[in-house]
Structures are given as C-alpha cells and as structure tokens.
Image 1 (cartoon, rainbow, N blue to C red):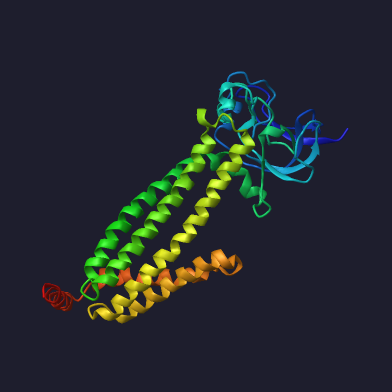
Image 2 (tube, rainbow, N blue to C red; image 1 turned 60 degrees about the vertical axis):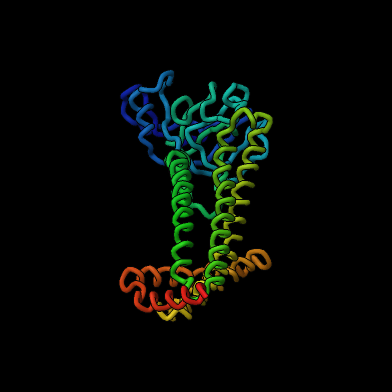
Length: 345
C-alpha cells in the first residue's frame, strides 16, 4: 500500500511527530487533495495543546491548505481531478441547520473544522468534503494561496469595510474640493467653473452608487432572513455580480471626472494667478480619463491603465504647487475684483 508522510499530534500537549500513513481513498462526498502548501496559523495551537473540545488524537493540524485534486469520491458535484483548490477553517457544513439556511456557513451547528475535528494539511495528501473546497485561480501560487484560506479571510472583512469607510471620507473631501475649485476659478469664467462643479459632483454621486454595490456583496454573503430563498451558489453568484456592477460603475464615473478636470485645467490656464503648465497637465489628465472611460465601453482591450498616468502627474503637481507656492493672491484678488465689478453692473 502506498504511503505518505504526515505531521501529527499524538495527544494534547504532545510533540509533533513525522509519521508514515497509508494514502487515504476518498469516500462519498469527499475528494483527495495532493497538498502543495499549508500555512501555519496560531489556531493550530488549539490542536497542539488540546484546547478545542472534542478533538480526537492523533490529529494532523493545518487549515490553510493549497493543492490539487488527485482523486474524487462518489456523489461529488462539479469538482474534477486536476483542479487547484484551497481549504480553510471550515472543512464542511451540514446545509440544513438554522445557520446554514441563512447562508452563514461558518457558524454551522454541525460543521467540521479542518485540522481539528478532521485531519488537516500537515501531510502530503488530505481528504476533504467537497463543501469545504475553494477554487484557486491559476495565477496565484500555492505558497501565496494557502495563507489566504484563513489569515486572508480573517483580515479581508476588516479591509473590505475599511475600503468603504475610506471612500466615504474621500467623497466628503470631493464635495469640499468642488467648492474650493469653484471659488478659486470663478473669477476666470463663472459659468464654466459652475459647470465643472456639476460634472465633479456627478462623478462623486456616480461613484457613490457604485460603492453601494461594492458593500452589497458583503451583505449578500452574510445572509439573513431576506435571503433564505437563495441557495449558496446563487448567493455567491449575486455577490460576484454585485462586485462586477461596482467595477463597471467605478469605471463610468471617469468620464464625468474627466470633463470636470478638462474644464478646470482650461480655467487654470486662463487664470493668470496659477501657472499654465498646471492647466495643461489637468487638461491632459481629464482627456486620459475620458479616453479610458470610452475605451472601457467600446474597446475594453484598449482601456490601458497608462491613460491614468497624466491624472497622477497632475494631482501630484497640483498638490506640490499649492503646498509650496500657493495662489498668486494679489492677481486673484485683482481678477476677483474685476469679476465682481462686471457682475454688479
């Protein structure tokens, strides 16, 4: 019988042991994975030190697994030999308890925990119920994918919410920035400055709508009474669709922001109290945004990220200029006085 190496814990607080074990055959509803990488997590100490109730020994720890399916048991839907998969803390769920019916599988009342209530990835081959599998994209290396199965998931939710919170701060700053640019550029041409405000606020509003779809994905995956009618696969599909809508909306906002940038660049160029090169950079940046936006819609293959580079250069140049030199106040006041005189007549 073919054998494999495994690292097991023989008893609570026992030492790690490298042993030879028979290579197991997958049973009903499970697959066998040839382990390519397995991360080390602090939670493995629950097995090592016997802190988790109900652990039977000897036990093989490890719940950050990346590998390839090399055998498939009976009654396993979809999964095939050769697919790259990962396994995390949740080894399987029952699908019928209250938590599972809500789509919250991580709190399943009958769950199996990888490396604790079932053998984990500190071995060359591991048997895993198909419910615990996650597909790994080809571009991610096993050594990079393995930690994502636990550490990545643990930090993902916080980072996901932090991204949304940062956008809210950015949106508030965008509104204030529109007012600042209007006051700054109104003496050059009031109507164009006001039009730039409209396009700027429109871009902020459109991105805000897109961000709602970004956040909706976490709501969908968290489940709830309103989502009980959907199967797990349907919930996953809805969450992915929500993120794709966010990506599209986040791209479309660029045309409005681009037009606002072109208008502001033109007004800066004509102002006399800000250097013309800043206006030229901002016009080029706006044109880059507009071009990328239409490329995304009409010819996605040509929506090069390089089109965003002028906006980066313009933003950095504006920031540095305002911090180091600022506005030529006497010229701005003179231009404002002329503007006020024209509007009062």
